[in-house]
Amino acid sequence: MRAWSVVRPGPVEADPLRLVERPVPVPGPDELLVRVRACGVCRTDLHVTEGDLPVRRPGVTPGHEVVGEVAGLGSGVADFTVGDRVGVAWLRRTDGECAYCLRGAENLCPRSRYTGWDADGGYAQYTTVPAGFAYRLSGTLHDVALAPLLCAGIIGYRALRRAALPPGGRLGLYGFGGSAHLCAQLAVAQGARVHVVTRGAEARRLALALGAASARDLAEPPPEPLDSAVPFAPVGDLVPVALRALDRGGVLAVAGIHLSDVPPLNYERELFYERELRSVTSNTRSDGREFLDLAERHRIRATTHTYPLSEAPRALRDLKAGRFDGAAVLVDDLS
Image (cartoon, rainbow, N blue to C red; front, side, top):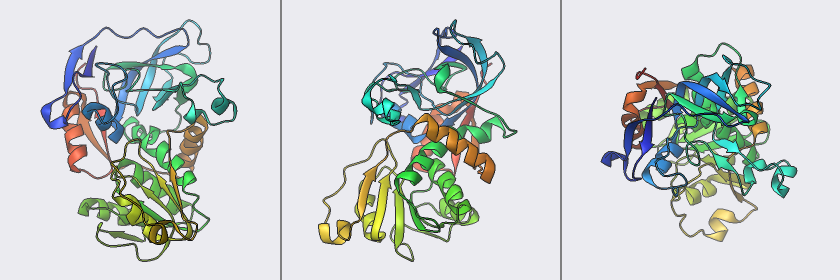
């Protein structure tokens, strides 16, 4: 099979990815072999490729928004069959026995492992996934439209929950890429007023088309105080900006796995009046199942831009440069 490998993490402009030939992976006893039909391009893939995240698996194949078809079963798998449509997401495995797992917070498991970071992911023709961490995919949504829901959508949902948005509340989204444009749709569907702050004119137009109450440039604050805010752009300078936009008692939840340094915060301007600053760490499988159910119920749809698998480096470069709104998705052209 053909797969992309991060041969030497570094700027995507310097071509750190190499297209390689590998054997089709053999699933472990509790794993599925998955033929990749579509794989979303997530900003976390960019962090893995450029070295913002430390190397966990040398030469790893990125990609963790995989829609695929079960092509093989490990010897211990009994609840899937060849041909089933499944989703492979970021959270790949937890120990299931630590204090965090036992209290329902498996996203905090110290021994958690991740697709496209600890194990090879979906920038390839085949990948594997533990059966217990695969999502059963039903419905008629096309593979390409479904792929971004498996991380961008799920982590956006987790961030929305962490931001404690009240019913009918005022939500600020900072940055408007793959995750934010799905989070916005869900928030609007649930009755929130959504205010988007982002640098891209195309992204602002998309935000308004999806029902946002306002969409402004980074230099402009939202038109009203916010109950909750989520910065999706990995820019630490946005944290004090977003905190200042919160109303009394508001909550800010930082959605990314990587964030540049946050500048010093002024207590009176940015944290007083019981404003809260929270982080978001991965997600639980329960988050994923809940979001996929909500996405189907509310008809959440990703705005997608399709790239052939052979052009995965271009997709990452375009993501970094902000050349598209919504989300990019890879489809196999190497068979």
